[in-house]
Image (cartoon, rainbow, N blue to C red; front, side, top):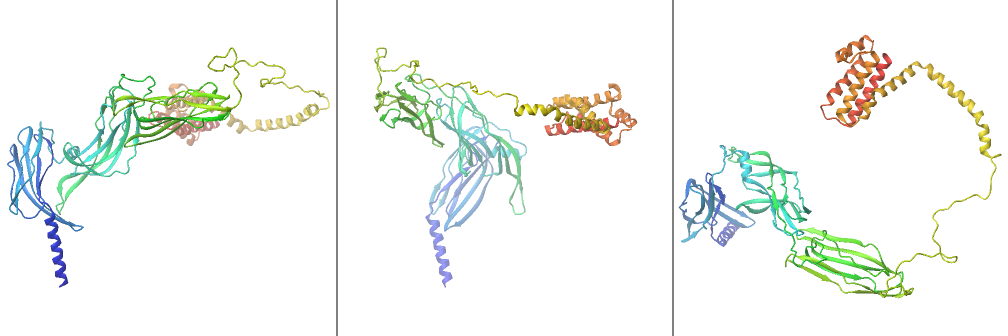
Length: 590
């Protein structure tokens, strides 16, 4: 009994959900723009059950290729029921121009429901491959990498945006993407804007529905006029395209291909800021700004410090113009300003503040005027220049030395620096150099140095004996003498190759020449007699062991081969050491 009640409630909810939907006969087309030799898919759908007597439009100016094919779908998700009954037609245009697909109609509960009319633009025939399932053709038709620019004709100094979007139709799938060449922004100050993830959005491209993601977004500020080019972004994309075949269950079989896409090149033509009304103190600020000048302390003592802060805040090219400078009387010592920036770049542009802080230190008692400071910028919204000026500021020094006025002083109270006159009781300049002389003299006799020099001849005798014995032992070691001579000979012949280290061709030519020159000098043979076969035969006759001969030939072959292949400095160094070792080994046996 309870089961019947539950089924009745469920059926009632289903009926209520279906009746709550407003009946609508919608129409979708596969393309808004197509070539005269292309086909168009038109689908009419009603979202409520009970529709009958569907009447399609006459499709004037179109040839009916296939249809109608009918389909019905129904789903229930989270208590919400959706229903769709569709009629699909495949059409081919008969002529070029703007063609109209008239409204279709269907009868529902005694009422006639009409669809909207649709407009299609038909152009000249386009190149279509013989095989419509060609993956390259499908990829070109269904994937587009585009650069969207917010403004093509901005002012110099005005910020614009470039956004790179990847549009993908529902006919294909994207499995992997990688940027192979990033765009270049020559002639622009640029700042990339961080994107939080890559959410998939729905949008239109050439009037058709597409899914798209934003790959990259950047803020560009042109720094000069003329035709500025934004080079393309290039990407490798792995795409799953339908192969035109289906599996046992009727599912379309896809094929993955990798293809390079490039966004179209964009041309930006910035224009100069107007000359009319341009202030003299304009330094290139473009945007909307606030300007303020403040003084940290207005009353202070001599040698105490105060700070003058010049602050510009707002929205615009904050990093691309100079801040105004503040002028102070000569009685106030002014130091170089400290620059601070608090700037953020986001989808709203460049915003934040920039300020310079000057430290001033008064020297004398008195009241001093700091003249007003002005700042000019170009307002993009009103397209005219604006100037902001601050009021004069005053510094009151209440304690300190008085300024001594003389007949030579000017009426403005400005002080002039004078040379310092030195007297007996006044301060003098600090001396930077001096020469010291000892007041006491010491005799050389009876000093440590005297006795050391006295004993030096007696210490030299045993040292000379030890050195002599070592030389005798060294000279009696014939193997060692020969080895040292061989090492010296190897360094002599390989010196030119060592100078060319790092230059591939020159190094290996010098290395090969060094080996040939060594054999010519050692064996007294002519250049024409040197070949790999002759070298092997001559060295075998000289009773050189097979391993040494093999190493010598290997070095020659490696030198010849390496000139035509990429090598590193490490490999050059290894070949150099091999050549040195083989010369030493040969010299010990010849």
